[in-house]
Length: 482
Ligand SMILES: Cc1ncc(COP(=O)(O)O)c(C=O)c1O
Picture 1: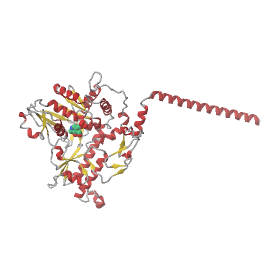
Picture 2: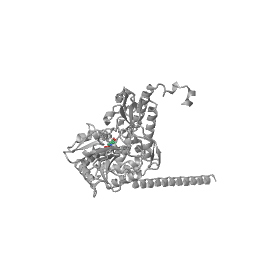
Picture 3: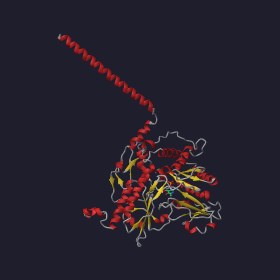
């Protein structure tokens, strides 16, 4: 009896083991099939390595105060050994991983580098990434469309239609290496082509300093620079005047309009900041020549891509000739990148678009700085109104790219020196043709730059009004009155 039971138990055990083994085999097989399926759907070969490298570099944190770039990991030292990627630290941070803040380092409020948008692109890493094959568009030209990508032109028109900031239907579009190149192309195209009576290039004070530097540097016999558009308002019939109108303006954010009214006068509208993160979009601009750029619009200043929207065919032809002779078009990699990034912006999820991010960031920065400066008797900021924005369909708060700070005390004529003594480095007013009672402070830099600026401005103003920011000196029961 006992022997029979043992044999029976052994058979059951054997059956159990077999069933278990079969199950394990079955599961393993399914996993392998699944694996095979996913690897065949990836079908990655040559792009796998660069993709891995890009992710490896992107994963380096640099303590949140810097970043590592893929080009620094390609550096080969003298012994031909590849170096690892290094952190490039934000201003006033140091250390191999940017872990050290340098408290006595001066605030960098000079640079117009639009790094405030960097977090948005990090958030959208997948959709904005690009893989470029070694043989990507090696030719000088695109098939059937010269130096300019047809697809990119169409995307730019679509973008302007969505934002409602410019009329592009029936207009010519020309690409340039940033709007820096297009400014001179436009000046060249509008100038009189008569050396006896050169055209005068006249921006309105305060103006973006590059207009003066560039016009004087490239000065042809056909045009020259004159400082102040308002001086020429009554004299325009006798001169061929080219007015550069920057709207919104750098440095003071004002929505300028052309001042010169004579039919012979021409205007170049620099619409660099006419995007909803910097200003209200009231209506589509429809100026004869409008300049735009990726730099402050989406933050990719280094891509060096700008475009002009032009009404007149002759002006378009002259500008195109200038650009062809100057650089033979714009880098195809830049055009590809612009195209990819436009797509991300156009397809952004509602309330999470680059415009939402950009506006919120710039508005918060302006609010914080304005709150502090508004209690000062020594400094003031430019006045910018709340305005209805057709893009956001609401009244929006100011969010300029720069603070145009004024020193109010009579004796403080050199405002730049006043701020420098407080460890704040801005750009002096005379750089923009204005008085040195003004200083431009950039608000478009990294969050680190802005936080540092705010901190130093707080200190400067609290010295003027002691204890205002020091809550330790205020008894708790007074808080309700603040
Ligand atoms: C008013 C204005 N126009 C043009 C430029 C030049 O920009 P980019 O050559 O990067 O397009 C700038 C740069 O800050 C600017 O502020």
